[in-house]
Image (tube, rainbow, N blue to C red):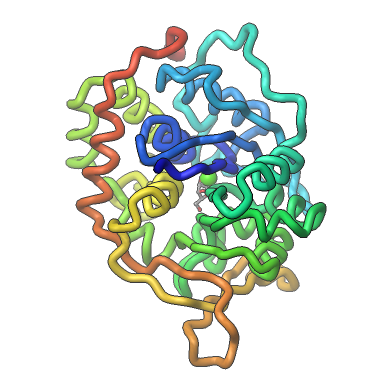
Length: 323
Ligand code: BDR
Ligand code: CA
């Protein structure tokens, strides 16, 4: 049976690949896309989500709900320096396309109740929507079968600061609240996992570009801006933490090491804002999450190659930026 899921996203670059997985992988039953403030301008993120659905030939098949336009307490922090607009300037004609009118937080609560005990949520942006849903309806936590989170680092490097990974940095209060809320939580961290097992180097990217499908062309364009940034900070390839998060939900056989941890997030310090303290079981703290420690990197790349090889017919023509 396909896994019923919602993807909560700040749609740019690898978020798009995660959405493509939710749309095209036969192991997924994607119920909704919910938008949260994160990577790039909120309305650009919404356009990116519709563009991604269009590339998959799936425009109109999955509803998009708009959620929090800023973190719970703090001003929004952008990653536009990393991602540009998040899609390499690609666009579609948006006429007639509109998100749902129901707020994403209410949609999350409703869809979880309609699929109680079955629904998985993949949260690949700041955790603002998830924290608000858990605060608004305490049944939400129990109705969600499992919450898969891309966020934090496992006692390793951050990316937006030395201490913090972007999603937890942007809304640390939300991340802290979600980790304390009682969800069955699985975490895909940035360091070491993503940096070791979910970086596609130039040879990988050349293999994908050679596939030549509309999705392969889309993939190649959208990772380009981030690739430049990654190389400028010493990462030899494009990073795919968000699509890995969906992949380990749908294909748990990709996971080669995981362990229970107690995970908490720093909210009091300016220096280490958003730092994820991941305690591995020797500090007397009860586990609140399973942290993925390693995946089969080759198998993950093969999974992405199979995804981009889907011979889709885009729902609307893709416009490229004019030089
Ligand atoms: C995370 O931050 C965002 O820039 C990416 O989409 C990913 O979810 C990595 O730190
Ligand atoms: Ca993201």
